[in-house]
Length: 77
Image (cartoon, rainbow, N blue to C red; front, side, top):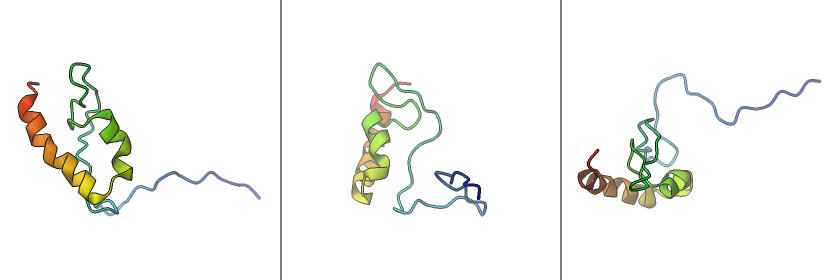
């Protein structure tokens, strides 16, 4: 009997879907941290917010998302 490793995640083939929490990540796949302000150049989250996103409850995720427009206005990129 041969054991094959199980994938860590599966890719949906029927199109995009919301995560189980219902709050989508603001990630735009431009993952580069700015040394000047510590924010991701793509989504404007901190490294801690990115690292803990999967642990946050929906209210915490919404709070991060609510902060993004202010960060965008404050950051000249």
